[in-house]
Image (cartoon, rainbow, N blue to C red; front, side):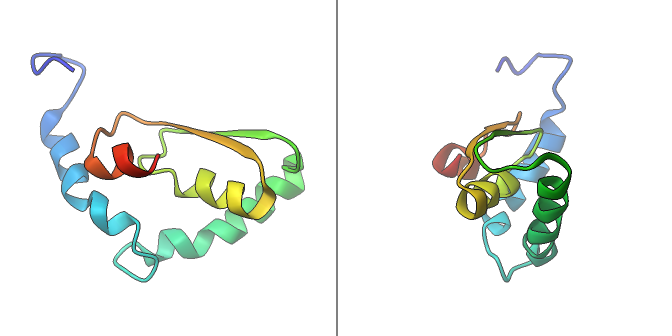
Length: 92
């Protein structure tokens, strides 16, 4: 990414990069996001039936929903995010 790209707010990205490591802690500051995944996934499964499907988590930031869907429903998953944090590069 070029630092002079007018479509990217690098200050905003740096805020998310600073929080990225905490996102993976299931009992940390983002516990609520982890806690709602079973409910979100159950709702989506009820509406669309996830078994045997592919899931693309767009704009996810860190991919917890796609990862949970893969663990719970054995779906193929992908993530699409503008986040280039070490956390996203390491786990997604």
